[in-house]
Amino acid sequence: MTTITLNPSKYGVTESKKRTLDSLTIQVLNATDEVSQLQAIVSSLTNKLSTYQGFLTQADANKTQAQNNLTLINSVIKNALNLRDNSAVALREVVKANGKTEKVAKKTTNVTNKLIYTAEMINKLANLIVRKKAQNPLISDQLITMITAAGTNANNAVALSLVALNAAFTAQSTNKEVQNTAALESLQAIKLYNKLTNDKKTNSTHLSLNTLLNDAYNTTVLEFNKIQNAYNETLNQLNLKTADLNKAQVNLKSLQAGLAAANAAALAS
Image (cartoon, rainbow, N blue to C red):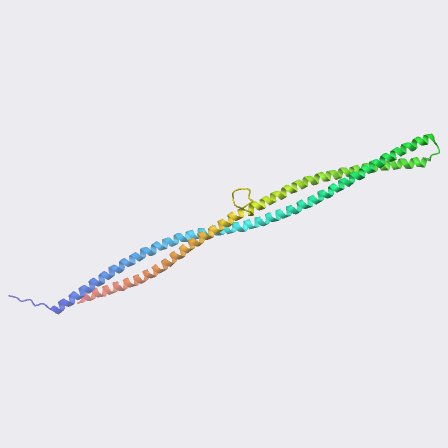
């Protein structure tokens, strides 16, 4: 009968190494799983960040366009204000000119009436002197010549005054047309300025263009800030998870190296 003798010490060492290898293997598997999870999270956050970057670029472009629109509307409003003020000044000047033209027309009418009356009187006097001359040859021919010349001059003066009166009436008519045009222009300029700036005088239920563009700009700023906050938050999460991934990868390599060393030691024993 053959007797088999076991070495308890060697058996204990072998079991201890096996437990160590099993423990290291489990740690490597857990570390590998952690790395995989972190890699998936980092990849997801990277894609999310890229998407937010696209949104942020578009939001920034929208904000820039809205700001350019504000700059443009401010320039338009300034020009509309100048147009309104200049139209008002022009209308006042036309009204003044029209008033002066009316006064000139009235004075010219009075002068013309007086000249016509004077010419009539001179002509009557000339006719009377001519008749008297026929009755009384002693009446001087020079007197007849003088009174005839006076009548001619008076008639010429009447003709000239009528020309002046016609010119005054023509100017008055032109000034009235200009005044009407200036009044219409001034009214339209006021309406335009109100439509651009005054929410209560847009002649519609809509707000003024200035208010609409300012609201649009404020909306783009809010949208940009919201997306930028989301982008920054995602970037911060990505940085944290990337750091965790780097630590997990370092830990995995260390565990893998430990497991490899333990396997080598077990094979060598």
